[in-house]
Length: 424
Image (cartoon, rainbow, N blue to C red):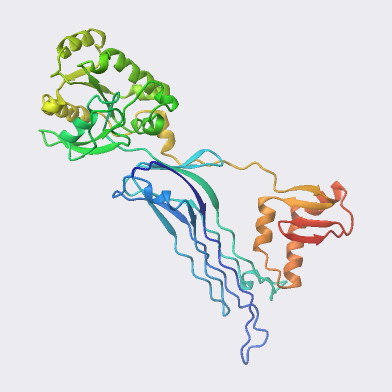
């Protein structure tokens, strides 16, 4: 099954908890803090696997959760980092953050890999908090929460040449004859419902990758028929090969077919038409094909035309040789700005306030990523830990803001599921 788009939820691993411990050994008085740090949680990494050509494995694993790092231990022992979770994807995979709509990765090279969700750092043990004024801190941290991301994983096939055309013009026949690809071929529309890839070796021993893309119809750029399920794959091809039925199957006009295809390509992405094009004038063995070809040439003068009769293998070798030679002259780097855009990791800088406070049925509710992270990482084992938490809130300006909003002594304050009384 060919799957080229999947939505996933990624939960990187939380960091391991720091340890609160004290050194107690014979002959060593006031041994001091002895708790180690926790280990880092699992990163979630996307890595190219050239043996894959579909996202079907991800379709059944839409939710991925990394492992938590090991907790710190006494005697100053740090917890072990969790093993990273590696997701293997085909070459040509794009990862987009659904919350920002920014592209995080465009994995076009064989060795490409990237961290999409970072695991949380390990919580610090009480050794890390020792200072001159507090040589024996009685608190430690929980591990940092791992990143949570909602992403769209999309595959755009990497092919040198893309065969485009209306249904039943002979695209599948061509790729089956010039490569080892074996697509389904039958005398009805939309026989091909997923893209097929084949490696072509021309007479000069040069090879290239050919993609047979499902047939277009009018309105495909808007989702009609197979619509944009395959149009995105055209964006990655270096040459567009129009397959035109010169026999006028079902009374169609070859020139009108050619114009229609280009209109749909332009409507989907105008930059596609900047790519080099050729025309494979197929079914030249049919009646009226020669006459139709002459009329076609009078209207289309700026694109090279190769007359072929695919079913009889006539003209195929010459056309594939010409394509191989043409590809030598076309650079492999992307040909338009969108591709350059996708080859970079993009970041959105957050401008949200550190926290927000509102009153909900008499309870002051505090929200904010930094505040909630502080709560999750605080281990309320001792009074000293609670005092440190309160001091951190005060330094953020939360006490001042509550007072400004009219909070009074004894009012209930809530952060996530923790409730406490407000005190001046």
